[in-house]
Picture 1 (cartoon, helix red, strand yellow):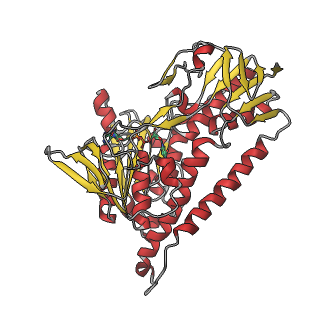
Picture 2 (cartoon, protein in one colour; picture 1 turned 180 degrees about the vertical axis):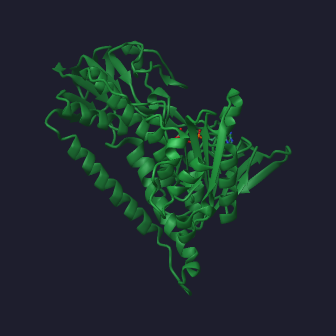
Length: 445
Ligand code: NAI
């Protein structure tokens, strides 16, 4: 039996960051990973999509080359080069993580770990015990049980990222974060993209007005959307859905992507540890990420809270702080998020719709990219930011779409963590000319 201070199951952003931080605090850590280090984010999520998104951005700029005085530009799109660059980015980051995990206080075991009981896990024929255990096993794509011919392949996001050819047409089921990012990317790559979404509007996490404007922008770029449409069958040729008028419609597509959410990755052996969990909602945790067995913690997608890499990382750091008895003021309730479409969208805190639902008194201050000097100089005039505050000026949230919206939202997150009011924000000097002035303009309005 190997004894250590801390066991971590899963080396995604939650697990590996927790291991690194714990090791720096002097804890001896054993971290288990059955697959490649880096988890969904690095291998089949955030990073490969951002590599593709950068290619898509360059293509869109080139498509507008004449606006920038580049006439008669001719280029050939080499998808193999795009894949190669993505793979190089991934392997460089993966080796960075392996270097982090080579810290003398960390042992990386490349094998699947299973609970034997609440204090012991086993992997590759060896048993391990520790006074603290963190479960960071991530999530898996959800699938709809739809009728389909056996030969018809339905892709999930990991499959789409590992295609070795560019599909001529792609039907995406679900206009959530994954659906919208891939719609934007593959449309720029030249694929004919159709999105079928059950709800009235895309991106349920975003302010509806902003989500609608973003969808319209993607529509202008060439993506076809069918909203309020439920997919019924997948055929040899494509996807059949019932549209909002009740008509059965068929979309022909070479490839079909299912992007209808992700589910926490839970295992039967969790029951041997004795904590509460379910397949649908994941491991039950309290505000300190403790499971119902207090020395076992669950961080990241597996606790079903916020399926975001940065949420997992900060949850892990908060757990380690508790283990070593270090107070912190990490605000896990202020969780910014971004959607890397072209242009990108981002949000933190309450939207205008949510304030209405909750019956809150609020003030909504708007600002547009088209009124910002830097945005016009960049030829990025599309965008809207909504700053939501209480009547007393407390910032409750901010939702935006437009070039570099994520950077603007990051500033709002920082201000919310430090209880800065809208008036104080309007008095903070912002560099001219920058997109950050869009936020200041909203605060002044
Ligand atoms: P999602 O929950 O964001 O969106 C799923 C969409 O599928 C919803 O709009 C839903 O109404 C729709 N849908 C469900 N059933 C349907 C049906 N039968 N027919 C048509 N539409 C249907 O889930 P998504 O996009 O799969 O993302 C999974 C998780 O990964 C999310 O929690 C997301 O936050 C995270 N993620 C975050 C990223 C980021 O931060 N940039 C990037 C990618 C994923």
